[in-house]
Image 1: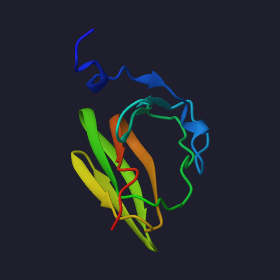
Image 2: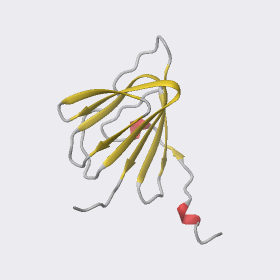
Image 3: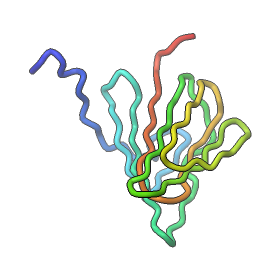
Length: 125
């Protein structure tokens, strides 16, 4: 055991349906760092041609800032991001900053890749 063991965290499977305002989707595999100083979740998303993708994330807010990172595995990954009452189609590679208390949703539309979510709990203004 080293003095920096606490800085290394093994990611654990955690289905997207376990998150408030989200529904389970067979198209998403999610892992997260449950013992980390910030909230980190990585979603592997994959939509093959002919598959249907229902929106899995309803509009909601958080009490902390959030960063979403969208990275394609190969060439293409596309998300529909709602910020307040505006909708954006965002392609990889992109990052979205979501200030605390702004209503938002993030739903993938097409492609294959990774959606990384970072939240900063306990922040104060």
